[in-house]
Image 1: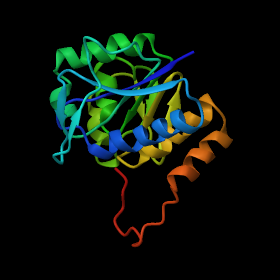
Image 2 (image 1 turned 180 degrees about the horizontal axis):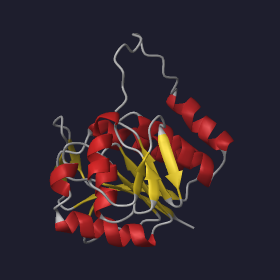
Image 3 (image 1 turned 135 degrees about the horizontal axis):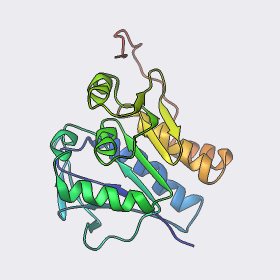
Length: 202
């Protein structure tokens, strides 16, 4: 049975928030489970990301297949996105029927705006945690976690954390060994050349 994984895009989304987990899921679809169908969807056929990457969405809100999992990237476009009714409406009605609702970075703000974080633990980029807290509601914003899984909602911290979150999802939906295979295919072995010196905590 087909398992549809939709990445929901909007103007000024952060590139790696989308491309990182998309790579994980698409590679799992290619090598682990051929019934997985990974695609992008947006209000318009073409979307410009924050750093200028232009993505031709596979579907628009009007013609996209019904997703079993949605993933919302972050980026500075999430702030205007919180008042974008077509975007919020699409997230809400697809998320209500999805098996998994996920976000990366400040994509958590769009999940907040659509009610998916109410009563849940969640995370976001370290620089936006207070901003997420200030939105109010019964949401516990968690520090020190790369991703947070609460019910059917999984939120990832900033940018590259989306890769880890996606590998975790593969491990949950398939098996940890399958997730390790995807990680090996990607040659994902983080080894940054310079030690972090700034404190990346809000």
